[in-house]
Image (tube, rainbow, N blue to C red; front, side, top):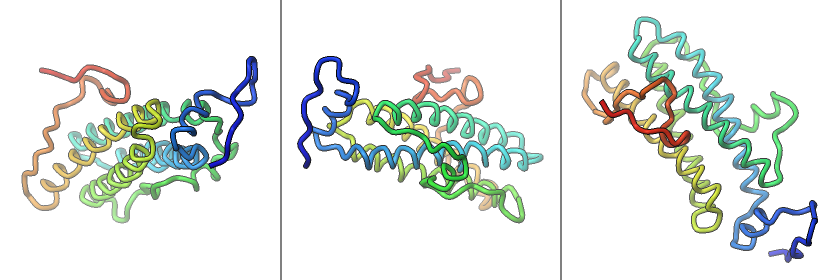
Amino acid sequence: MAQHKPIGHGDLTGRVGVEVIRARGVDVDLLIKKLIANAAAEFSSTYYYYTILRMHLAGHEDYKEICEDARLEDRAHWELIVPRIYELGGELPNDLPTFHNQAGCAPAKLPDPPTAVNILTLLLESERCAIRSWIEICDMTFGKDPRTYDMASRILNEEIEHEAWFIELLAKERDGKSIPSGHFRRGEPGEAPYSKNRQFYNP
């Protein structure tokens, strides 16, 4: 591992918040790359495309409501990730197509035909990709980078919930089975109790 000089008094060329996690074994450049990929996935692969998917869940208002929760919570995730990228010394690409193409998950484009089953399947697989991506960040930062680990674990908690929601809906819609998710509705759409540190809805 390359040795880095201590950051001197008034020095603006380095960040102590970066050096301390690098000293603890974090590959900061790789972490930034993965955070940008996850930010692109939360913003373009899910938030943007979930907007279109929700519009096409016509006649399924309950499905639309849950899709809306996931959509808005993915936007909250995007808002959490971006400051951390800059704190670490990274930055977002100054070109939207470039940013989109760096996404760590495939875009959740409207399936053909856009049936409820096909849309729910796509939503489910998108959440599964997000879980895999965020557990990787958790593994990279556990015990080394508390700031990023806390953020990643909060997001991961919600992605795991989203997966359970779509398993429940798809099981009922496609297979006529009941696979409860343990889901209670959010207090408001996109409440994001983990990533926004909001209280849980408790009827």
